[in-house]
Image (cartoon, rainbow, N blue to C red; front, side):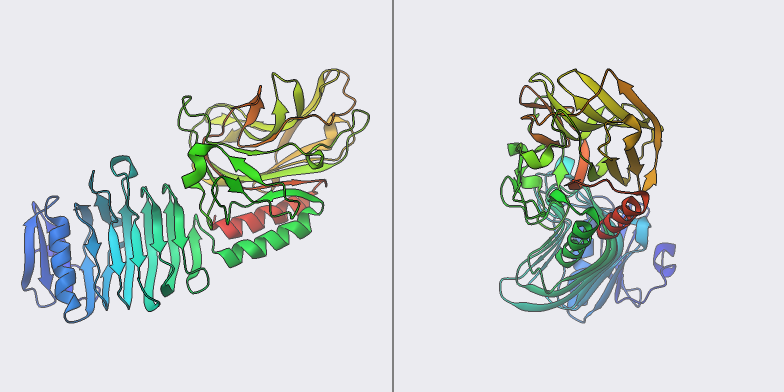
Length: 448
């Protein structure tokens, strides 16, 4: 028998492995279950192994290799599908427009130790793993140590009637509708999943942040969204509104996705209507405030993280920008429109990568440039404080708040490219310890 079979050391009832140009499924005694051409018949051979084990219960082991999936793999009850970790990859072929793995009306399954690529670029529909039950069920399904990415819909979809599902120790990113849809809300247990946090963890973090931030004017963790409305969890009812193209990208328990695809679709942004709660200057004096967000940057153009600014309408109050390039600074501005003049603080150059980060910009309300501070991942990265003109104070102007953008004549501009969530605006200067606490809480809830 080929080395790919004999080298696999985990217990199993069936093993699927690639041997040169062939894909082969054997039982635990080495007897053939099915075989075919590798890269062509992969899903057929894997499904044969799953069906075989479904009659006796047990584990189907996938050896190392890339398995091209032309049709959804259906897992029977009492069958586990286990790979060899990062060396085992299920790849959804172009045009399948369906799930990679489906567990429908079944119980007692485990999916673990593999990568799953939903190939959203080549598919208009489908989740990485879908659990679907038409009646209330005790599913007893466990998903762990999987890396799911690029599904057109969800990384993992759990239907409302699928009780007692566990999801842990996994990474789920880059999926069109969000990382996880947990329709059960209370019966599924989710822990240590990068890119997703269950509702109870979100609630705990909201409670903690409200206490740390103090005078919170708006808090937007991107959960429980409905249509184009992004609820304000500060209880001030300053709800946000998304551009129309963003509607299907808001996940009710995951992150808020603010993708800006190209200049022809500038509606993929989030806006909070103007309110006096978001103005921290009277024209004569400023008051303290802080801005918070978590973000995942996908391209390196200049962009805005959060703002209350409309350039053409001369309604500029405050904003936080990121410069262009792989190594560039964050800049936090307060603007006196009547002069005009501004104070700002510029961070040291940050070497940008494809990881989640937190940004906290604080101001003590002193009308002095040294009152501005930037914290990046909980650390003070302020490099230079500057003043331009004779700055007195910001004015209370009519600009909307932009989350992941600013405005120019009422039209979004400077759009952030990537994923953003956990926006916070508070009428309090955060000190270094408080900034560190906010960073740590956001890292915990986002599993970063």
